[in-house]
Image (cartoon, rainbow, N blue to C red; front, side):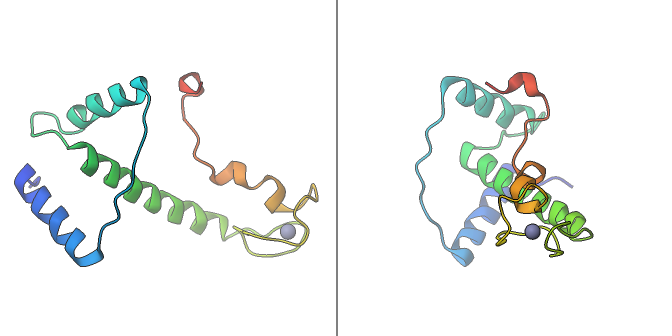
Length: 119
Ligand SMILES: [Zn+2]
């Protein structure tokens, strides 16, 4: 059963109390603000919309899960140059065309699925 808005907020406060909170300032352009407003509603059809903070927190957590999944997948491979298990963060051979560190970011950077959205 999906959580109500009040339940979600109570859970959010509980988590904040346990983990501590850091306030960050975020600047968004008009297009991003429109996306944020729209998707807070669209992601909770027929229910109380996400609030902006909750929505952004969920995206951070969602991407963390996604990164771990990608890293797990990459860990089955090795750098063809130095033989280190992927993903390699630093390598003395970085810059070498065959070293994964030189080009590997393309596999982990945040990519918009629909390239037409990108500016
Ligand atoms: Zn390497």
